[in-house]
Length: 443
Image (tube, rainbow, N blue to C red; front, side, top):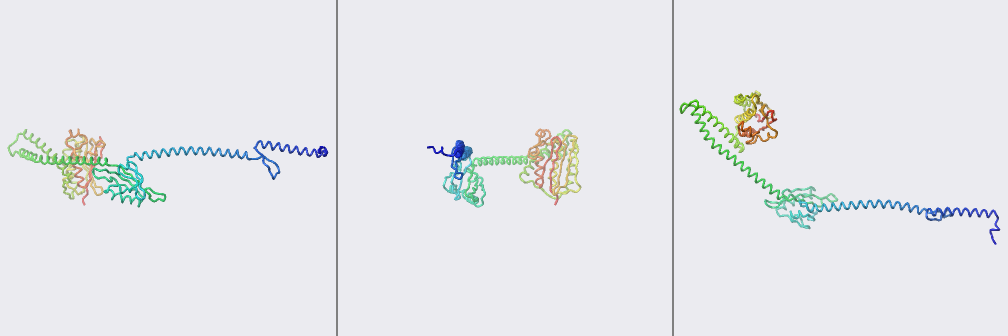
């Protein structure tokens, strides 16, 4: 017997509609389940609904993939950084091992904890032992206080040319503090550079200089001795030439007098040269005795310029002076006359006919400044520094054509400096020169 057949038609239609709705709902749930992957029971709605787990898992998976890519990139960067650090450590180790400077580390107890081969060669050190005890006994009095200063003051200490006597190993030692986390010194870096070869080269150079100085002194002594020996016979020649010229031993013919004049002139030039050599020797020996007294410096200049006027006129040179009426200085008039004569004679010698030589003097603070200006050939660049040295001239060809052996300016410098002054030159090649010097004013 079919129970449905006895139900009213309306009831059947309602049941069909209900089943249709449930079928449609199940179809929707099935579609959602296929899309999302599962169904879950919603107790509040008393119905099945699609689960969001698959979508959530997909979202989490995408996030994990992104994080994994980032981690892989970071890992790759760390690998590169680790390779670089390993290379740097290896390079630093090779450098420290092969660097010619000795390097070591002392802890707070001054125990040598680490050192490179160079320090072992320099100081013959051993790790794990106090550094100070491994040094030669003669070195400890200097190193001990230096180590204490580094820990106490926190700054580096350098001991140059340390640990070596003549002919032994020597090095420059540097002690550098190593600060800890708190800023206090927790250790010391030791740097040692072997300077034995440098010291040997320095000693060799010092010996060479001493030898050259000895030779220079021997040369000066020889020149002084020869000059003294030559001056005596030349003085006799000058004396007898004067006797003959005065006719004390009979009248001379004009030709004989002319020859005698040449002999006297040459002898006088030789005596001046000898006197220059003796002056140089005295100046170098510090024996250029000066008689310092207040002088009318203007009168000294006027006298020298007057005496040189004949030479200037003979060379076709205009010689002028410009000196204040009252100009007093503390000086040795004879020696200053020698300086002025040398400078003016040089100016005349190196100025072409038709040129000018001017002598100016004026006071500046506590000194009198004297300038000897000329319109001569001038001095090439770089030559001004050496023309005040012995036996130096701007051009040796000029020495041959103009005469002289290059002592005048050396003597002038020595005499000016003996007065407490200075001397120099300002010049441009082809545009003349200005030689100047200073002398103290009278007290």
